[in-house]
Image (cartoon, rainbow, N blue to C red):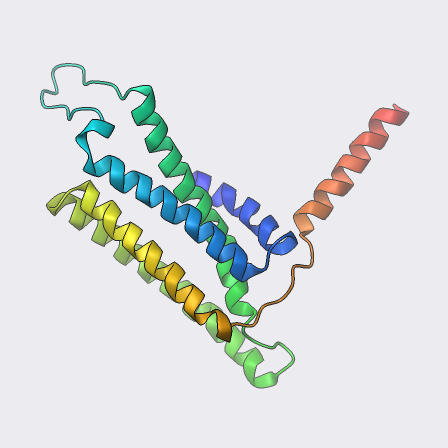
Length: 192
């Protein structure tokens, strides 16, 4: 969770500076999908993870370097992808409304209410679903369901591309803050 919310800042910089929000959304969606694929494959194949710990009185087998690398790569790809999505998705939705049109301006505030409601209900349902599937079928099925849903959301997003309003990137306020901060530090070291 911490990595996801921290990496959302990076996703926001990309969405505001380099890519359109839709392109950012699809790119980070693919990163999330790739991470889910790695986690699914590792959960499915016994050779890619340590043997389960049967006896709690003995020390369990530690993951080897390759197993740990697959796990952490998958987790951080999911975190990076989700962080980028969290940064771009609300703004992509807001771009679909014209703030100068009074009717659409009212719909914009309603959009954010429904967006937050949907995110909260979706998170609750997702956690419940993954916990249930992992308990009944196994982690490979749970990660597989997440992978399938990540693939479907990218497909549906790309199908709807023709209908979205896209704004060009205007630059990130984070970049401007960093530029000013670095300039001040540079001047401080020159004159002190």
